[in-house]
Image (cartoon, rainbow, N blue to C red; front, side, top):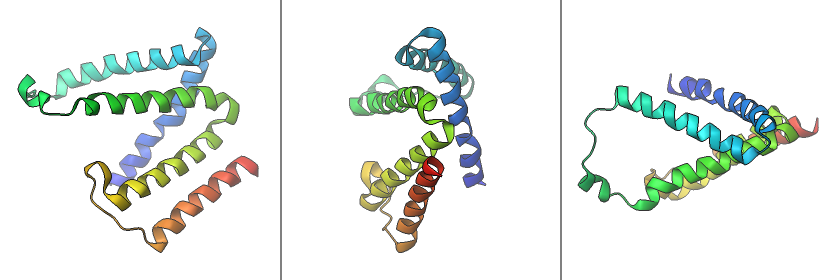
Length: 145
């Protein structure tokens, strides 16, 4: 069921890119559109957190967490969303997300192979590499055929 949940959650991404691309046209800037998107998302997430999160950590506990962890995820999300806002109108949703998925898979294989950022090490296998190659070939087919 978890892979199905991941599949369903990912359906929001091309919708988000198309909506943000329209917003960029409306406000005259893809960067401003991405900023508005993140601001709206932050408000929604703050409301969801207020309802569902209980037992916040103390400031002392939070201070034990490296500062870069508080910044990097949001910065990477900014890069991703802004890139999507810029590229969606130029590439179309199918091409953009075909290559996005291929890029995500390649990065994930590296993270798994070396156990980076606290992930468990998962060795590369012929099947995993072949799957990644097939995804990349599929992205090329979406773009070129």
